[in-house]
Image 1 (cartoon, rainbow, N blue to C red):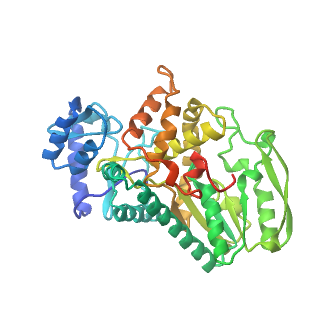
Image 2: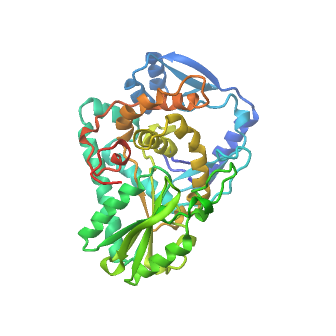
Image 3: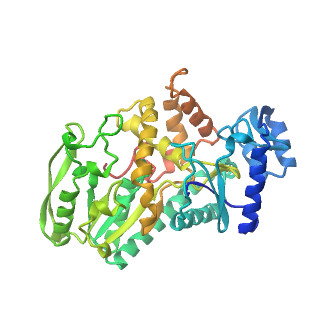
Length: 448
């Protein structure tokens, strides 16, 4: 968040405390201290973290099936990391801390430019949604992987699924109520790849119908220019991530007519031929509002002809609230990548290596076209499900094993495999047919 990690502590801190922490961190960097790595037997590592008063690590180690674990040490401090740290403190010189109540943000170089520090940009809406879902984790009594595995081992997996799905439905109903109350005419739904936008949109439509409102759903993908007019990326490929790939004038013309109750002949984009074909005839008078879904929907340039007072913007992403332990986040990016691996290999004919190869390009598109507009959203919906790694594990691990040792993608596949093996298995039998997870594992009651 805001170009770094959002951190909290188990006590109150103030701006001066954050300054002192940053000063001490920079002193450690200046001292060029080595970061050591060693393998420990599981029992010995558990005993060590018990003595270091790190109960989160103890819970995790009690519920993983390994004989030994890799620990890292700096001076007399030991820790575990899902991604290995650097070899020395001197390699971590580029960072700064920013007080952000109730904690702080550690800002560091982005993955696509490791030699520059971004400016700090407050994201209060994103912070609020993270805190909201931390509260959800507290309600469930599951803040990290250890308690989740414990509950599953005791047979509480089906109950966890039901409560988490109920929280999702409650949030979607709240958003629908607000849309109706504000008398919005165009609801714009955006988010990064594999966020679950399509299923969210379908479930939102149902909640709007419950409110007596008849929605029309449109995808911006159907307004893509033909391939002959699609912009190229720097590698010479077709760039569907840029707003220039969309026929913005035609989209605005159609939206304006639909709002006024007129008829339009909507296009349908054929991804095989790379051309638009004749779609459906839409009678604007038959609908109360439009649900428009696409990656650029938070960018006002996409719907510049529509008055702001008629628009309601929603940002959807899998903002993972679950942690491995107190010091290791489960990356939002990893959650979406695992979803995409399962979906694209099962339903879109991709090989897992292709998915991994394309992922960095997808992320670059998100950095340019989605994340800069997050804070423009009127509502944010977190599509992450606290139980989903346990279900996705059964689908994803056999796919990842297809990546052969010695290929460029092997290291990343191995990392994902190690991550998924931290979780106990959970059957998808109790996952509802309208769950966002069904968009990726199959068996959904919705047609995509």
